[in-house]
Length: 84
Image (cartoon, rainbow, N blue to C red):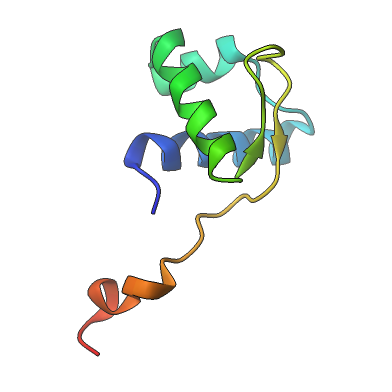
């Protein structure tokens, strides 16, 4: 399950790229999220580690969206939707 900050950045990336046909820059992501560059880089690293985006700090403005929606936590779905 994604943390709130990660989910927010993922949704911004997905919506931004769908509407503008390009990925947002770090400056644009910072403006939309209100996060510091350091926090934003940490969030992007986590999204990349979890397989939602392809991204590297060596080229911070190059983001490739791999999965636009958060994956369901299949193991603990019952906690979200009621008892087993």
